[in-house]
Length: 351
Ligand code: KG4
Ligand code: ZN
Image 1 (cartoon, rainbow, N blue to C red):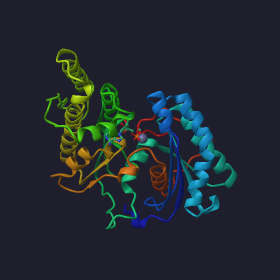
Image 2 (spheres, helix red, strand yellow):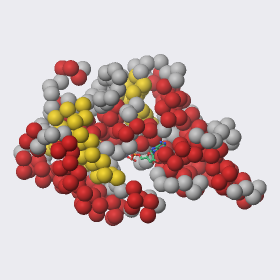
Image 3 (cartoon, rainbow, N blue to C red):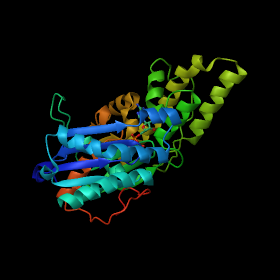
Image 4 (cartoon, helix red, strand yellow):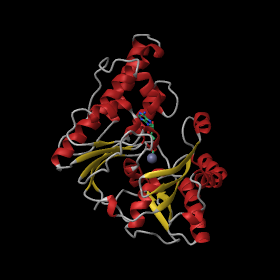
């Protein structure tokens, strides 16, 4: 099944699964006509993370203007789009319902079809999006494809044989990769979210300064980051309490060594899985795929293409929801107005 055989369609996407209020218009699953993201950065900083009640109230305040802006930036009105795609889950219930109700209201008022999207499916489809300022046309990912999905809530290895088909090979047994970055960021006194802050600190540090453990979990395609987290905590306590060093002095080396341990396990296991399952190409998506150390290592010496979204499409956005919405819509997978939010929704399970 190749993209060229699929019919044209413009999809309005809406995403409110966590604390980003986002709307976008995407054409033919790959061309972004607009991509508006309102982030709750100040609230995150104030609360030291995402506070569900605050996040959903903020979505209510901003959703209407964000959707309006996405249509205006695309120079379109609602009548010009073919369907409305919206994140149904997984995510925070109070956040999901804001986007879902907005999408339902628009679908009811306009008669446009509604397409419910799994947020994780959205992250995977961000790798299909073509970015205008890229020098060459980016080739479309080819199946069978091995996908590593690494976000704040998930770490999953998924085999895709064709569009919209997901075989889950394994996932984290404890913290998600992004969650581990966030927790270690907090331990090191860095700003929230921890991922970008650790990446920044790691630039000045030595990745070999501390030999942190790698949980290989041989014989499975699962991951675990709790042992690594504990090892980092013990190392920090040793440096600061036993040796009396200032945290500031060791942050960069700890950040670099921690990041190297996470990236090593993610890249090694993904490559092995690709070999084992005969995947032609690799795909990496989700917030953690913005990490340059991960992007560089996985692209190095990997046979076949590695598809990673541009940095601004790695973290939560609605262009990825509209892209996934396109593939569902053109395959006839539309939903009724009765669909509900799915706060817990494993990828590949029917909603
Ligand atoms: O996909 P996402 O925006 O939201 C979820 O669906 O969870 O991912 C957010 C996660 C956070 O845990 C954040 O720390 C992590 O992605 N992240 C990064 C980087 N940028 C975001 N982790 C490592 N390096 C980064 N540059
Ligand atoms: Zn996400």
